Length: 455
Ligand SMILES: *Cc1c(COP(=O)(O)O)cnc(C)c1O
Image (cartoon, rainbow, N blue to C red; front, side, top):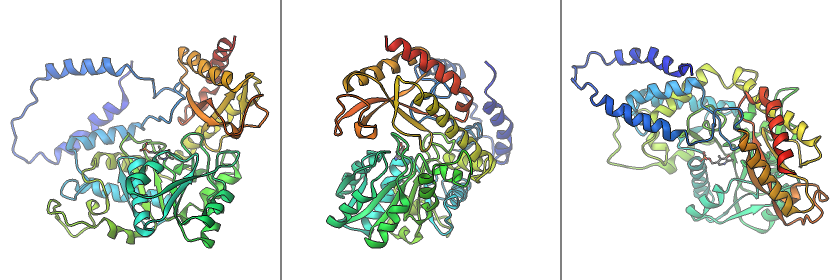
């Protein structure tokens, strides 16, 4: 196997960083016990083999995307110092990287005077957004679509806020009429609008929900943890997004807060979410007076606007470096690679829907595909999905399974389908740009696997 290019990148750049500390007196601390470490690492290498090959295009199951080599290299360099972005003392350079990288994400959504920071992931980012929402709309309910991430109901429980789900349309998007019905009958403080649901990639109709905001007073929090970067594809004539998704992403800047996960589609290692608030004034909710926080300058310090205290400065270093190399620009290289993911999903969709063994409910909105299996009953269809999943895995093609409501499919898809029921379906997240070159191979294996599973 060839050397990993990111290791040589780090080896070349690290002396430049180390050289800046060369005037310090030597500590004499040469690393000892290298042999013992080598042995431990050999064990680690063996045990880490017990994983699915997430980096490979034949892994087309869950929402997993390998970090870009620049992100891995920059993260590793950041780790040489291990800065802590809780305070400027803990990470002066990496705090600046964070402020700049977050501003670039905000400007992708059309924001300039925002407040925002990185978090451990989408969960904490959403928690902060709903925490602020709860402060501004005390005692009022949070709602999200029935296809929204389960984290919203759990976070609401943590924050002591009432939560309820809003029904979805035939494509799994929040039903604006169902939302209005709830707005009329309940005190709703915050509507969580998901632009790209985790399960099926549905894009809620933000444009319609904004119209309702003119009539009813509520906050809009956009959960774009997975889908946020697709904003960059809205202007494309071909290979862009559908009309509905384009309309939703086009008005994302009208939201009160936005969450996006650089560790999902932003090519970052895990541990990198981002929360943004349109009104920087909400920063006062974070205010604290900790005797432990050290103030080394009058500059803004990220520890004052985050709920998490210690945070990895290396994550900010990696994100900044990635955005420097691949700016978040429509028509740029990053956007182009995102477009390839979507193209891959559309191509596999075409194969699936022209094959009578499968039932595909709708065209993918982003790069997630879900499909059911034809059978004489719902129960049999669920069993078949499981067998195809197993047969594909035996052939090194890794898909995912998802439990879906039957009303996402045409009502005559299975003889005993009842609108309230659910079934096991197959799911594939085609979020690596290389997937586009692998659609034929993926389809070939899937088709073979289905042949063997359905005998
Ligand atoms: C992934 C995801 C989350 C949770 O984020 P983590 O980074 O896994 O903590 C929340 N909402 C949506 C829409 C997601 O896709």
